[in-house]
Length: 306
Length: 304
Ligand SMILES: Nc1nc2c(ncn2[C@@H]2O[C@H](COP(=O)(O)OP(=O)(O)OP(=O)(O)O)[C@@H](O)[C@H]2O)c(=O)[nH]1
Ligand SMILES: Nc1nc2c(ncn2[C@@H]2O[C@H](COP(=O)(O)OP(=O)(O)OP(=O)(O)O)[C@@H](O)[C@H]2O)c(=O)[nH]1
Ligand SMILES: [Mg+2]
Ligand SMILES: [Mg+2]
Image 1 (cartoon, rainbow over the protein chains, first blue to last red):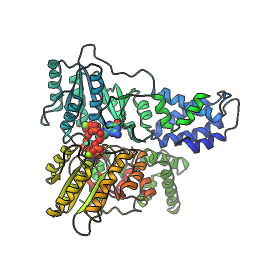
Image 2: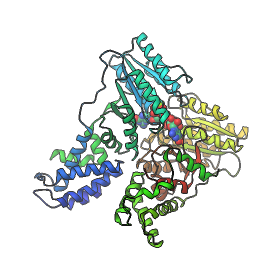
Image 3: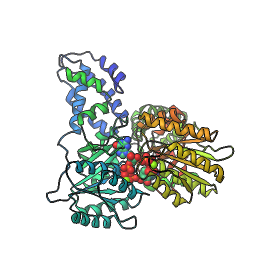
Image 4: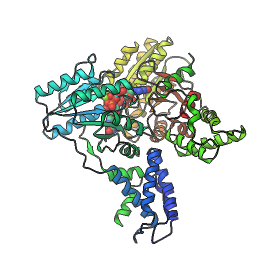
């Protein structure tokens, strides 16, 4: 019935007997198990600490609803806090007042930027927009061909100047081409890079100051572990990200990186990638993500019904 | 430069001195429980997972008692020792065929670094004077074959390829026939990225494996699972499932030139006994190193 968090949490929670108000001991016992669940989901250790403190504070002394056990009551609070932390403002793509809207995707190597660009472009196209893709990855072998193949698949034009021009120059000319072609959305595919690669991070800043993008989106692999915090913080410091896209959520990773990144940057997670096929991106649901991170789909439906 | 030094230097690119900074790891200068708690946290932050982190901390406690250690600053070498011991339980030597071509099958989830690692591995074997053939077994992802062909040009070896959408097992079949007639030493087979919970894709992989072992008895001699060093606990599930399907014989741990530490290989080595054989330390052809337990262990106990 319950997964992951499941048996151990359940066991710990069933030991909670007190009715009336949640005691410190109730909460402490439950929080130990919650910490384990969050660790197994790859939420960063420091983020877990803050989170657990915050929940502990809120939970102690709370009245236990009649329909719930004290354990369920704690989990309910944990779940609500998680959902709220990852939620917030409605996270749509911001459109430029005066087209074209420029969107830049950045991130570590292999995170899913190029694939995600095609998915975004397809979504826009289905909403009667005219996107143009700019191939600004001049480093990865066949990165440009990859974008071209995808562009052909979804029937969206790709602007490229081969691998011998500077990315900034490619973007400059690409924007001009967008104007000429009447494209109303420009998506820039950048090469994967490490957040600690000074030259390549500088390159992104240069592209950003030239193109003045409406959105700078960090693409993150849902399988990312503890290091997500460094990556997200550094990209955010350098580029003032406007949002995050979490990819490969069609796998079975619990995706604790979502919570880490959200707490590290405060940026909303705007979309999720759910496969290799080029289909429109899916919106991010904080509540689903919360139960996924906790590994407890069913216990929640129990609580929700209560 | 020896392997150990080169490995360390590769890691050092991004991480600064190794042992020099270890002394500052702990905030207390008395050897109390808080020190071991901090140690546990450092291991957790390196993606080692709860169980393994606790085990290694226990081992360090024992070593500290045995060696009558008094100061936290004396712990880092013991931490490195405990981690090295854990990693040395398995043999990291690459497997090769007794005679005839060695077939290496490279598998893993999407974007882990399979194709790049094949390019680097080809360069490694070529620089040892071996004849290498690449098989473009990813017929699915956009321009995956073109990517491998670019690597083939970069390091100077032939690539057996089919058209997009072709049966990957047929590519491997052709590569084996070509290798037999061209007297090749190594056949490195690329495969499409696949998440381990996709049954149909795992079945496809099993078929590639079957065709290889039928056409070249004793092969695949090596099945390398490529793990992205940035990956967290999901890597354990990747290792379990891929091992079931294709008998993984070793791990390539990539992207260690970043700040992620790749500590998730510890529970994988402990629980599954699969050795780490190679590490990826960058995107150029030289950036692949044979695994060194000691260098890796030291980088794990380094300060952030
Ligand atoms: N299963 C799954 N695979 C994905 C998803 N998004 C991307 N991928 C796959 O992940 C791999 C890497 O994707 P790319 O789009 O090439 O990643 P990238 O960030 O552009 O990579 P670099 O340009 O090398 O940095 C490919 O095999 C994609 O098919 C997703 O949501 N689910
Ligand atoms: N920094 C760094 N980047 C790496 C390393 N290995 C691979 N990469 C990069 O990671 C990205 C993905 O590598 P690929 O070799 O295409 O990965 P793959 O597993 O073949 O990907 P799919 O075939 O799409 O599943 C590329 O941008 C590579 O250049 C490494 O050791 N360090
Ligand atoms: Mg790309
Ligand atoms: Mg590949």
